[in-house]
Length: 342
Image 1 (tube, rainbow, N blue to C red):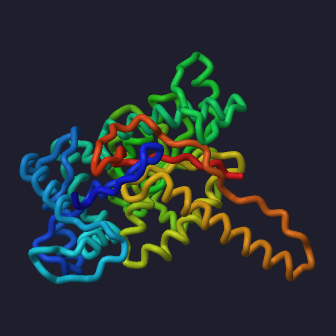
Image 2 (cartoon, one colour; image 1 turned 30 degrees about the vertical axis):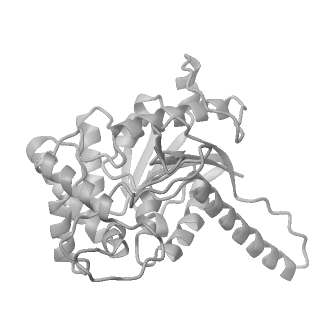
Image 3 (spheres, one colour; image 1 turned 90 degrees about the horizontal axis):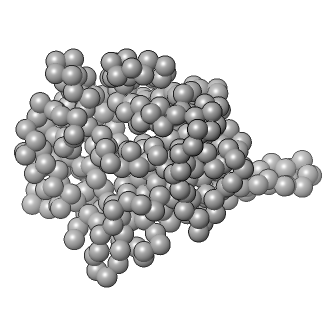
């Protein structure tokens, strides 16, 4: 089945959950991207002025047609659209500006919050699981690879979580931060490189009674933020960055930037539909090795011994996502993985 990547039971499996249903594979202009953004959207429980059945059919067709191999060759065959050409639309800011312009209009005219990437169920799981993880870390218990993070609410939770500074990069409509606020977090900041997304997120937060959440226009790859945060959330942002034609280079920029945003002892939580748990861990290990090698080269020039630790350490991952069986393997379509900043 095209578009689904599977691994063994102890690993999360990811699937491209957003794609653009395009009539041709060579759209490049901002006008074309705007048309694509206006004509396609994943079905959302929060509603839309677009036709739900048609939108759902378009998404299903795009998912079934997409070949998600990372090194696919370009093809202009209209009957077999090249997934790299389709998927890369999601890697451009112009796509998101157009998409959030549409959602901002829908909000102002109809009160709709817009779509939730990965769905509401995944967002709620991410928020509750992250809360439980942060509570455990606050109490000095850091889970290891075999430990399952358990959400056991207590009166102490809110007091512990109030001290956590939280940053959501690529916040979009900001609904993940609202969900984290419901879980007890109070020092919340969301950033996005699309000003229209920030306007939508702030409008929704004000309407829904979460005016304490701060929203800023900021590109994580060229962040102007100087503050470090104890918890940094990424729900789909690394996915979108990777869909840019210069994705590999931009992903390296991402890790350099994020490593400066997560405070020592803090947590980075990434939710992805394009990478499995193991692939995210491998990417972090590659970044760690790159940073260690760079530090060693600098210190060697100073005739000093290197004692640098890896910047990030894998902590845990969500094990409760719905699973499916394919080809004799069991997997899930989304991976959520937590890393500790050393």
